[in-house]
Image (cartoon, rainbow, N blue to C red; front, side, top):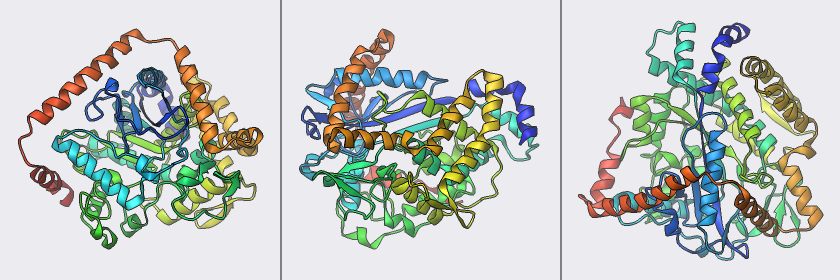
Length: 513
């Protein structure tokens, strides 16, 4: 690796500055008492179906703010502008700042997102009805941050020549991205430990039994004394049915085909459900829960698996990130920079793995998510049980040469960034999860009381931030145009919903080859 780093040094500024980052941030809308909002998605935010910056996820009350792919710290700045615009357009409502939801008085308060009367809208709504039946509504309103990263074409062209590859550049680029994905799978428990920010939950979100690792704080709040992220634990996104299929990561086409096939494998338990797209293990590709996804932007009406088979990987979407209530935006630039460094390392370092050992990964993540701050915690690494703290230190040490390389050619302080993460490994009380739990206990707040107090502070913080008048006009224009685009789509409907679904699911020729 030293030879590769040395060869890359002269080109580093071009490659690193050419990276593009995008952020997708989810927040539940709540009323001023801390209850989940039951009001419709505000018209002042445009059409959730057609607005490129502001949409909804599973429920009508779960707003999703989406930035463009931007360079350096511009994505976080744009997210701040979008976030401020959203808060300004809420009436007697706030944005819930935690990943785990507030007290759920009644599951019927969780309204499935509405997108209109077009076929595309009906498909999105029917898909969500299927999710509600399969997993329950409470699980579907767990929120997080998705971080999208693409490396510049110039980097892949340089690596292509350095490796003297004989395959086409698109295939080579996809192979590099899939190597990144496999490496990330092995190492993302470190993200869960360092940045996990969900050690507590309201008991109303425990649709299943309370796990033994949880204790009670008052009558309504459950917490893990050593937990880092209940969102990433067995209380978060879990689907036993998906264990019935093997998603392959040895190549982009193998990945796309295995996802496509999972949408065609019936799952007996789901045959009894009426309102869903189908009774398969997953209804569509996006239902498959994963901490990272290789992605290619889809064209209108195109399936993600087809896009990947046809045009390869364009970027990766990291989904293992909690909302951090200690940060005004739920995430900070230092955290994004650490993930940049980790993703670059995952892209460049060799990986002998061609298959991902799902059972070992699930075990490790569950251990770190539920008990990550326990001093003697062990995880499985290369077939052996190793102390998590020692494993985490070794990963940081392996990142150090890359941090020094970037610091030397870009002038950023990546070594200081690593030192701060190393200290969190040595002193677990410095992790976000420990700090949040300390605040809950010292102030004797329930999960919901704490979230409401933070939501109020974040709204005040946003109000004090300077407006970007130019981007404000863009958001206002997008609001207007998105409503017009939805109305036009509904007016120009040219086929039945049944035919629309048939045409969508009949795509698959490329994935079968």
